[in-house]
Length: 217
Image (cartoon, rainbow, N blue to C red; front, side, top):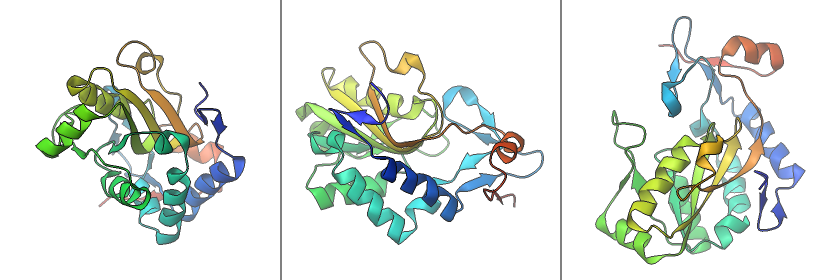
């Protein structure tokens, strides 16, 4: 299934364009400075370019529009419950659930723990995961699909037959095939898909007009 499709619905070009334009407007592209790197969730990959999604979600206008967009997406509408891919979308998912009357399975990943160490916030969240048939995970920025896969795997540890979809704001690469096949596979969707390099030099060559902030201390 294409990343922009879900239950026969395709994300309109206008929505993808809004997301991509908002990324530039909110100055989400950052670099850690000379000699420094970011570490991503999948396979300890290092990068000198990151999409700082909190800058997007901290913009009230953009956040409000994203809530409305996600609220009518079929994988949200048809899900029995929502769950954040920890930790960037936790507050957003709570707000989305409240606005559109969807229960939320709260998940967390403790600081400094392994990237796949996903936990339920409380016993009531685990009980909710056991009681539903389908879940839509919400993620801000996905690269390989690892974080959403790890979250789905944790959910299925308590409910093996759970149908799991994931909806990201931005998919910055191709989801790895291993996360889309087999009994632990999840179904990936995104509002916008744009292939972005891991290194700042290549990004500046490909997108010379997009500003990048240096976040070195």
